[in-house]
Amino acid sequence: MAGETKNRKGIYLPAGLILWFMGSVAAFGIPARIRKEHFDINRKRWQAFTERLRQQKGGKELPWIEDQNGLGEFAYGRHNRLLSRLLLGGRPLSARENACEVVAVYNALLALGPEAQPDLPALLETFEKRGISLGGYFGTSFGAICRFFRGGQWHMKVLKGKKITKDALKEAENGGVSACIMMTENSAGRLGAMIHTICISPKNAFSQEAAIKWRAHNDYEGSRVSDNLTDAVFGYHNAAGRPLGVILLYRREETER
Image 1 (cartoon, one colour):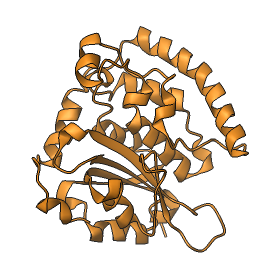
Image 2: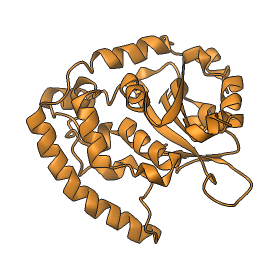
Image 3: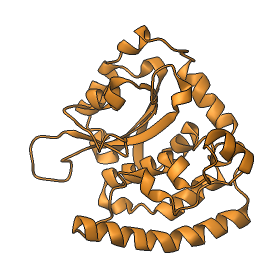
Image 4: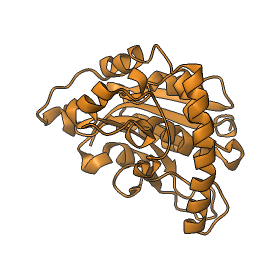
């Protein structure tokens, strides 16, 4: 849980430093011409993708994105042969490799209510313009996600590093948090194991069921369900990870009660 990572071997760089670095290499976006090409490609593929998922799920609603590995046909970022060889084992750059933050935003919008109507191609284009890190090879910056939600129709609270505590997460849960976006190390103190970003949502938030559990989307563990938000955050990757930043999102009516 929260204190367990302190006893593991590894290099524990301050969470703020890691998040700052990802933001510093997000100073330049993708050129407008390439963004337009990607948007047109992604729009066509998104229509087919959503239809395919709807048929599999047997519903008409927008689908949750639970497996980023299925996004290999979507463009996000600017391919660089050298960086792909160094960082991706030579694989071409695509949303499968680097779009976890954008997927987390998409899923969080779904959790915030059906009126949000998230559009993945539009989100990819938005973050390609501002927020994509090192052309996409370091994903998307945490600050860009915060900027996306800041000043919108939802209330946001941000926790970083040591401020991500059991008490803070319990308070958020009791306060009616509607979605949580978490950026985390896959293995605490081991940046080589990479960083991942997921959305955690109340599983039964839009049903008549009394019990609300918490589902982690696109977590590489099969959309793990937890009894509470604290376990969902600190239990990620069989409790091997270390949360670096958490964005707590509330529908405004929840904060006005």
